[in-house]
Image (tube, rainbow, N blue to C red; front, side, top):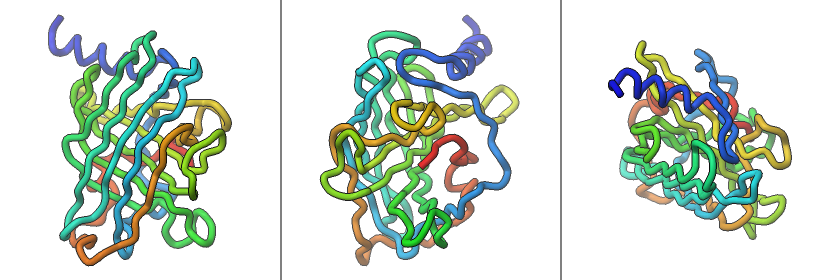
Amino acid sequence: MSKREKKIGQLAILAIMAGGLLVGLLTVRSTPVYAHVVPVTCDFTTGGGFVYNDDGSKVNFGLVAGCKNGGFFGHVNVVNHDTTGMFAGLHISSDKITGYLDPCRNNVCGSPPPTYRDICGVADTNLFGQVYFRARTYDGGEPGSGPKGPDKFGIKICQKDMNGNLACSVYALPQDGGPWLPTRFLQGGNIQLHKNNPSTFYNGPTDESTLCNGVFDDGLGF
């Protein structure tokens, strides 16, 4: 198989439904709906746990990300434990955190602003090679998991096609709110949004497209 054929095959895989993961091919909009900005003042998020696929199998995740000494730091790890379908065993492991954003600044999600954070970066996968990703976290309270959370996690990955355009897919886990609400309640684990400290400052670029490599939050939901 040529490199070109392999690339086409990978992008085709991203546009079909397989295993318990609903994958929708999305287009990148030029103007995001929400005011995604680096939190002011900045902070950091830790978390780990799992959500369920429709067949009852688990998608586990672990993460830490935030601002640190003028830049970003962290790691995101996601493993799909489904044993059937094209996405069986999918493993996403971040190489670099490029952005850490508050999608609800300026009360666009209500007042007081909910404790959502978006983590953007570059990752390796065992099925699709290198991807760009955008993960969404929500710290809704303690304890963090149960039938209705209250904590939430979702992720979106993108690859560039042969023309350099992003082909993006949302890994949706439809269980309560329908197939296009992929940010899901945790069924086990916890997400913790930590308060700022003297080291959690950021002084780099603030453009959302730059920080998230062109990956906007279309389809991620809240």
